[in-house]
Length: 166
Image 1 (spheres, rainbow, N blue to C red):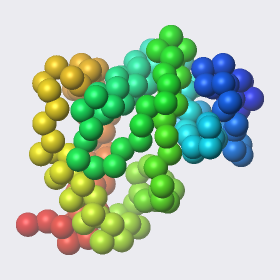
Image 2: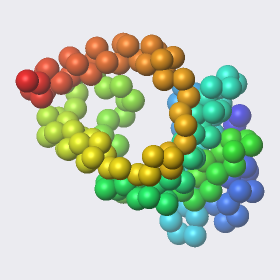
Image 3: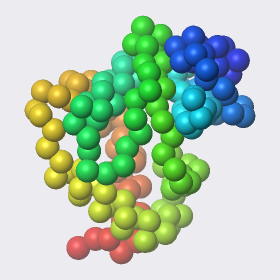
């Protein structure tokens, strides 16, 4: 999928969408920043043909629907629109800069103060209690976690290096 095709799809779902800059390719998705009615938004569409990634996008849309109905105790993006058939997701952009340009930053590349803030937000989310049936049923956790074993060891090293361990 090209950036133009994504911008066209978003325009059909959200008339008035104006793309801002080139799309960003991740390993599995295409992201397009833009504006809608003067608000900064981000559109996301899976590019990986495997059904699991399309289900992840649909699940993410379900989580945003839950956040709309049961707001979290921390700032989150708002769902603008979703097309579960494509799938395509459009959410508001949160203010500020990304924590790091890499999805999985190397240990020591994120400031200790930022790690501390992230842990505070995670604790607030952990204490949040939406209605049990409000969050959409997730996909196969064992498969997800098995693919993230390398991430947990990297995170453990980052926490140790940052001094956030007991």
